Each structure stands twice: as structure tokens, then as C-alpha cells.
Image (cartoon, rainbow, N blue to C red; front, side, top):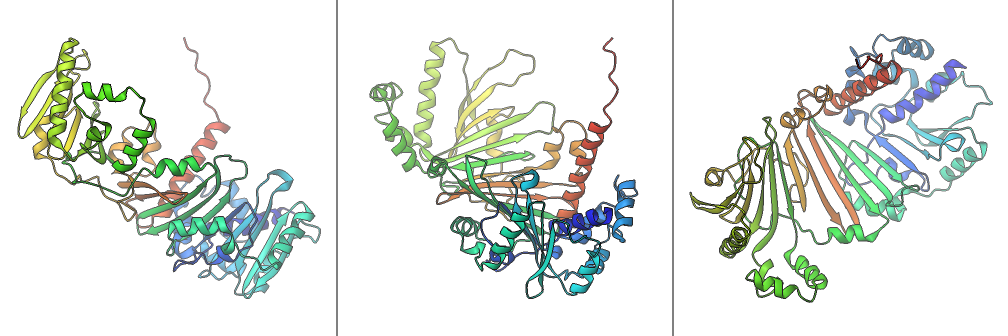
Length: 487
């Protein structure tokens, strides 16, 4: 029975580690699986680097552990050798594999494991210890593709078997199709599709993973249940809408968002209270359109995390820098009337103001001013340095994701790592640049992310770091430190 348990675990682990991708913009195996299940997973063993992932676990706490030795004895193979997995199960390592099932929990959980088999006799031999009464069925689903059904509820085994024989395809499911089209997938290394029945905010999520050497990319498409989420993104537009502002070198994070000023104007007019025009007139504007005409729709931010004192800035893109300069002058007059200290800053093509915001020793002032096509709001930086900044910060790199999306963030892990508590920041010591973008495709929200791990194979590095973090957390819970007398 012990080997039976390990055999079931083994084939499920194989599916988790090694299924394949569709490629060429087609869903591949995932699209051929029957619809109606709660979760689906497909991956490419070559693409995700299963051999390297298993190899990355050598030298960790798992390697040489009693648990691994027991698993190896039960399975008759080295669990950290991909070649031995392939030889012992008769799998075709170049084909795609999959996993699908129901996730209602407990006895309601049912799983179907799809395995491309080059030698069915070897797979049957690997599972020959499974007793006939075990809640497991093995059969050939299509040419060269075998399926293992696992469930403690016989009715669910029958239900999954009927679904497999129905001829229906997930590719024909409307929600799946909308998410797949939103991602515009052209051949990722792994896909995960989940129907979120117990989450009122989301109906379904599709995740695509790909590896490009040491760079890992993830793209997620989500179908919100509430249409207001997509409507909130409808005000956004691809950017930047105007010229890139100058940003200082050495920043660790750069973020940009771009909105449609026409859409913002429509929203402002719809929600503007009746007496708003009187307030706008006091500020020197004839109408809300007059005020909004100053802006291009871009907003930029940058943060420097390299020292104990965090420095940051925001830049609001401008279409009418002269109008903004006049607006700041009027605001400074109002501030002076309220006994707020405001110092004028001039020079280097910059016109602005310095405003003390803290009486603490060494606290920098807030500096606000106009330079070129941007309104600069600085903390820890000087307006007089702005003229020497580059319009393309080194940290602003897309790493192969959509850098023109309405919301885009990029940065360098070296600075972020210094702000991560404990030893968590040491898990990916060679990781460098990262990037994130957000956009809407109709009523579908799409998020993309990329990370340069600094290693030869990205997924192996991430898997090893995740395993190490998980193992440390498990050890901490299993062996809590002794309480120390507060005295």
C-alpha cells in the first residue's frame, strides 16, 4: 500500500512538473481537455526545465533527507533524476502533459492526470501495485495519451470518464476563449486555468508562464464578476501619451500610468457638483476642461531605496507648462496667506517652490516645480538637478512584457532586496530587473510580470528559492524556538 500511495503521488507530481504548451497561438492540450472542471494545468518539460528544477534541489535540505530516501525506496528511482522518472514511467518527455479536476475539497476532490506515453507497458508496470479496489482508473484517452483518474467518490470517476468521452473541448468554452484571446498567447511553457466558484470578485483566471534563459515571465488574464472593474480601467489608455520626463539615475523603482484626458473630462463633468465652477474660478480656471487641458494624461513615479533615507518623486505630464507655472504661483500665494513657509526655486530652466514638511533634523523639504513637459514633485531630490536627468531611467526596462500598457512598473531587485525583512531577500541573490504591467482587453483584466533571475534557467532558480522558503517555514512551525524570558 505504501508503494501505491507513492505511485499515485508520483504521477500527480509528474503532471505538476512536466506538461506541455500549445504554441503557435493555439491552446494545445489544454484546449482539448473537457470543459466544466475547476482547474487545469499544462506545462512543457523542456520549456520549464524539469531536469534543472529537480537538479536545483540537490544540496538543499531535501537532498539526503529521510523523506526523500523513503520515496526513492518506494518508487525504485532517484526522485531528483528526471531521466529516471522518464525511464520508469514510459513517458514521452517531448510531448505535453496535463492535469485537471474538481477542487471542492475532502472526498469531493477528483483529479485527471494526462500523460503522453511512448511505452504503455512500462507505465502499467509502474502502477501494477495498485489494488483493483483503489480509487484509480487508467485508460488510453487518445492516440499516445493516457489518463489516470483519481477520486475517492466512484460517482466522480464516472462523471470524469463521461466528460472525457463526450468529445467536448475546453477551447470551445466561451470564458476560456475570451481569456485566451486576451493573452494573445503564442506558445508559453505552462498554463493554468482556474474557475473561481467561491470567489465573488472573479469568474475565471488564465495564467501563462514562459522562460527565456534567466528571465521568467508570467501573464494572467482575469474575468471579473463585477463589470465596474473593467469600466474603471476603461479610462486608461496605452502610453506614454507625451514625452518621457527626465528621471534620476540609480532609482530602484519606476512606475507610469496613462489615462485618457477625454475620458477623465467626461467623468469630471458627470460628477462635478453645481458650485464647482465657482471654486475653479478662484483658482484661475474658466471650466473643468480649462483646468484639465494642462495635463497630458501621464503620471510617473520613481523611488531610490539605496540608502537609509528613502527618496522619491512624481512627475505629472503636461500639455501646457505655462498654465501650470501660473497655477503654482497662485497656490503659493494662498499658502503664504496661511503662514505656510514657501521658498522660491529658480535656475537651470526650473521654476518651482520648496516647502518644509517636517521639523525633524535632516528632513528634506518637498520641492514642486515645472520643467519641460512635467510637473515635478520631489522628496529628497533638488529641482535644480532636474535639468541633468535622463529621459530613460536605467530601471525602466520592460524585459519582454507590454511596456506600453496603461500601468507599467519596473525596477531592480538590488534595492528592493534591502527592504525585505529577515533572510527572505537572500533567496534569489542574483535576481536583477523586474517589470509589471496592467491593461484591459474589453471586460478582461490582463497583468504581465517578468523577473531576471540572473541564473541560467529562471524556473529552476525560482523553484529552488520557493522550496527553500517553504522548507524554512515548515521547520519553523514544526520546531518553534523556545520562549525567552522577557526579563
